[in-house]
Length: 638
Image 1: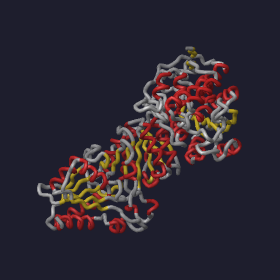
Image 2: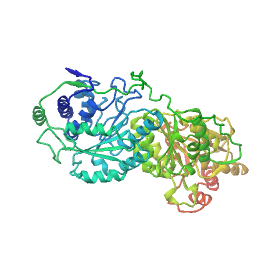
Image 3: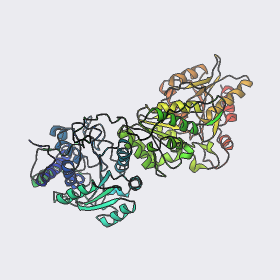
Image 4: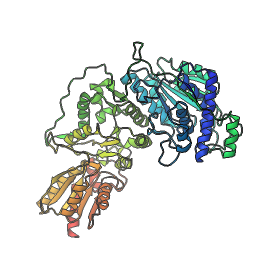
């Protein structure tokens, strides 16, 4: 075995490394019978030069806060990614050949952070560069460290709008520490890409979005080396390197062929390809280490990505947000209040918004801590991606917009769960309660959408006190968490100091002889309380449950209520009937084996239009009058 750890790896050796990366991409994919070797072969020269001469990375300390970041937006080229890991000595040849794409192994079909050298999960194209923007934001504005963020992109993904959102925001924030390396191999899954090898068109588009663009022969090692050197010296712009490459480079039988995307070479072809590339090699090469501590001596490793961020402002203690019971306060306003308090307590808390911060009240955080607030404008995909990148660097991002517009970013939310990052999403102006703006602005799918995300937490507070508590709890909640807030102002129900555990609930009306259970969350809790008062005047006792934690839901309280009220339950929600509060309650009860249920589920079942909030709640049948009627019907039909 040949081992080199010098920063002065010569180009002849790098050429041998590039051949090794191609050979190993073929070997690994052929061994398992699946994978993308030709997409890996086109980018082998690019990564061979990058990892040996330009990437500053301590492979033995992948969480060193000074490391550069290498994001594989072109995640389907995983044979190349893992071949690089073998070449730098962090995985063995045995693992490459017996662990790639196998059940229970960490070398998955597309890279995920189960490997410590992978920052984010990729494979859904158009996501790596937007995530890289978030990492670069952290480096420039929060960490204040000289690391670079290198992103290997495929040309097909430049048809994704999210790529252009990323370049736009990278330019706006002058992210000179961000370099996109585009493997322009001309071919996508089914044939030629939109622009093929038209580098001039790519260049014009990227420059129009404010990037500095370099074009290069992606198989000329000297030219690649010079381009990477120039990219690291940008002053105020992100850099896009357009590398013209050949798919399947190194094996003439598949070079530039549209028929070999996502197909491993059969054993006989693999044998010919490996022989033509000079056979197997066993080079172990490493390049530059991270920059030192600034005094000429290498600093001690900073292993914790959640190390204290740099900040230039003096943070004054914030007065805890408290509200008088009965006062009318919008939960979106309480979110803004809570975030300011949380920001004073935790310097790792950052906020992002999609140009509606004066409505979501993220503006309060922006005023208090402008160096920890990032405006993403009307670019919800980039907002969630930037939050993902900030989370990679150990920050605690809260990202807010109108709840309806988070649907646009759903794939980024889904991939965030696969990456295992902590994202805190806040959707305001939810449901038909918003009134006259009409259905395009009414989030009626959001609870179902986020409930379906693996490991997610879904919260829907009914008052300001609960909102403050849940906003704070989200800071230490792992995975994807979602807080649904309301446009209108509603009475404060809970006194200051009331606790709200995630996975719990509150029972606001309860006796030993309850006849029916009313379950609400957010606006419908207030309707349920009004219905309970009406029922009480008619001699009917109703138990009222505030299901503020929709996922995880309080199954114990639900089961007890079902038992106490002979299975008679009315669920009311400002959401479509599929996947929201009603589904959560019914799923919980049936999973627990509760029988003898008599459930009425009130939800928004038709397409709404404009009107006042009260008119629309009545039209949908989720106001106090309809809840009262539903409860009485359950008792009449018992």
